[in-house]
Length: 249
Image 1: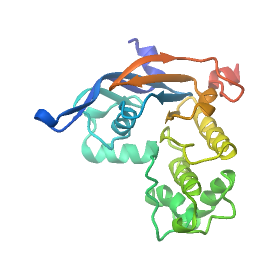
Image 2 (image 1 turned 90 degrees about the vertical axis):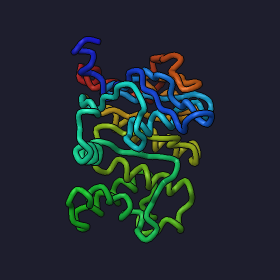
Image 3 (image 1 turned 30 degrees about the vertical axis):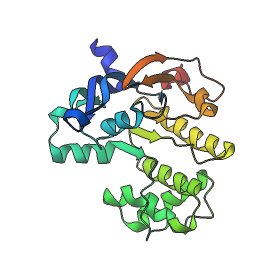
């Protein structure tokens, strides 16, 4: 791959493998995956349950260690970063939304969203107001002071999404971000993700079964049995964001 093409890639997976267990219990979850996500784009991963989608994004997000292949994130070869540097790199540059929301039960919705800003050194007084503003954009302006047990599953999902986006990460990785949402709230979530993607130094990866939101995708990677089978690049529907260069053209 040329250096010019490589410069457009937020994520580059080459022959990535991941297995669990050994011997007769060994499961090959990823079987030499080639996958890429470009800057300025929303990339979708689709396929049947159990095909390896969540494993792949967990490897990309650093929650799982791969057992083979090459992984590049935002122009950095992950193997070249030491343990501490890797943690700091991901804390600064990545945002995650997974099916287990992992909200802190003792904190309000706004405080949960503010956690990445607090971890970066901001005071509570600095971090909570922008958290409340982002929750308002997701239709939760009247729930900012509620604790997680007072929120529905869909509301908790939107809080978790806001937490993933609050520090303006360069790479956002989402597992089924619209699964617990009705159509209107699903559109609001996807609009926010689409807006986050339209930057020359940012990218968003979404795992989804929700065909209602496919029109947001710049690329759709179809996965099965631990491999990427094919990648389509649809023209996009009315909501699909243009790349930053196209917006400025």
